Length: 198
Image (tube, rainbow, N blue to C red; front, side, top):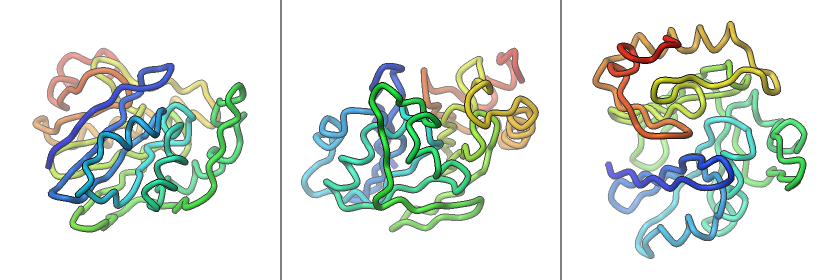
């Protein structure tokens, strides 16, 4: 599995392009859908777009990409409403909405092409925040960063819920690679040792 990272948009949100052979997943296409599309080779097929949550800086490029590649956009059912409401997704100045080709998901296993994806509901940053566990990598969205954690003062955020979500993630192996929504990659073992919020 190969992973390409593009840091895009006003908050330098990490967009991850995951490839396994000719099959592509795009995780959190934050902005500049056209630029993301140029990163896809002609012989590759984009199977799906996966959103870790419904804030605008994580789906700003999703509409272009979903139409361009004719692929669905997956988001947890508890954050789906945010995609259609600029006040809730914090895109008031840009008025971003996304409703077409949206598929809602919950906890569990998601099979897309040859990918086996564990969807882990991790509320706290938002009610419908999720992490995607693929092979030995956890795409953590805005739950966990290198030596920090996500904020909880936005729409339907919860300090008590993010603590429980972090405790759940901490039950996983130290060797797990963490690819966060912002900033550099890390490992769970490093965060367990050095993250002051854990």
